Length: 489
Image (cartoon, rainbow, N blue to C red; front, side, top):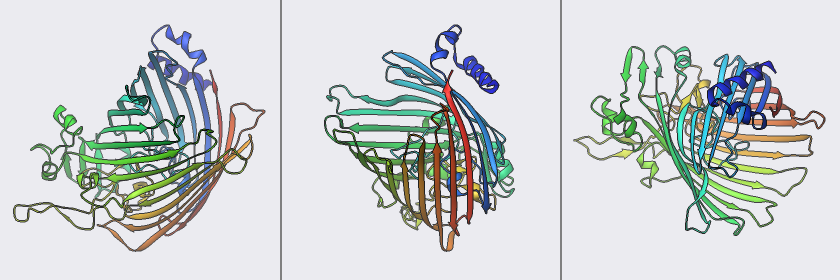
């Protein structure tokens, strides 16, 4: 409880003005304390004990952490203004860092508008965060990136549409925090970065009202960029500008100035990535069950952002929430295909040959930056194996051309016991630049059981078994045990 009291005071000092402390906290602050440990045999900690855990995990065998957090939700409850905050800290063993600031943020809400400052766990798209393999741009695979995010955080009805159209979206700027880790991890001859900045933006729309008609459509465009900072490869340093003009250029991707490398001048400044998302949901009037299909299309440049090339690269998923029963509650199936990447040929136009062929898109990799990762973990879908796995200590995605079948199941056999099951089968062709001599395969499993004893309110425990098979990241077997206590102050 002493740790909780200290965290309580930190949140109060950061977020609360004067006398509001005593008036608001007692009824609205929740706490969470958790301890977890895993033991493994084989090459690494098994895949599903590492990935899609917001970066609070480790591929090193036999690891663990203690975690404590305080949270206040920014619930307006009919009021015009509301505020919220969170602090979530961990001490870890055999992780990439011993002390982890997992979340530290403040939320402000005014009517439909919102402002978030700091590091807060976030996922994109329409994927189920517990059962999906992950959104292609923003999954729950990596640590949160500190940022200032402003926009409309929740779906808000558009006037004069009779409640049939709602929108939300945001714009944000932030920075990456893994400079020291990159320096300690990356081989001396390989590329690393420091002081890199972050930008993202997204727009979502929803058409329909399942209370009046069972079908709903959702669509979204998400975009993000890495810019500024330094790219370091051995003794070579590329210093990317970060003036106000450069901050503006990443909002609408534009070519770099004369103080950027030639490639940035002929194309766009910074590393830009994004994805299109679409989902159709069916929810009957009884609300006893529901079904959803969704499509996620990733892009690295304009050619795959629009229809210059085929959109066969995709994550295609289906989610079914079944009527209440003691066996199975939710089913998710996903098919991931990233082999195409605009084709195998790339040619940037020259005076001699002015034609442009925008192939070899190299998902998640970049010539100047260390790719779409932070702290070694891919920010997007983890099936494109994260650089943390690289034995040569390069910050590079060696497996971005692949096909994956993924199945997620969960159920609640009783009020005391729940379970989650993940099964994934992947075939990798490497990358266009570094193809594998033969197709590599991987089969990843997770069986997780949750216990919530009725005589111990707020307490829960998890027992997880996970395995890796195949020759992609190696074979392993592991067990994780965690205990958690939540409540209100």
